[in-house]
Length: 123
Image 1 (cartoon, one colour):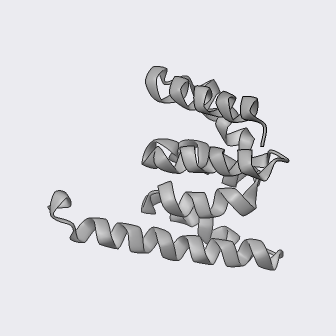
Image 2: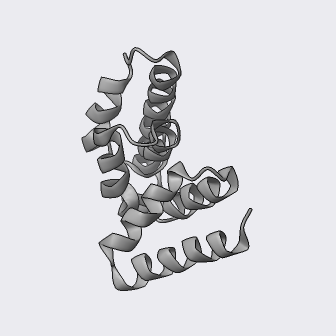
């Protein structure tokens, strides 16, 4: 892993989170396609840590079919049930790996929201 590349991702994350720079969030999303899997994993982790704030970015990736092997499970972690239809349309994808990832992400999304509705904070 390139240290400079990791530092760039953390800087983008800080800019996106503190200043709301959409461009920085978009660059983080693009980093999901990095050839260096460590950098791709760092970008996915930073987006996942952002929770629902990352949802519009990941939703955009799903709609554009960008970096689907990473974007699909990430959407399960950050998405809202209102946009579950994006995963449902990928559930029957011609690529079996994409279809399986979409089914798994739907399950995570549903479990996450079922758990949130049962938590004391949501009552």
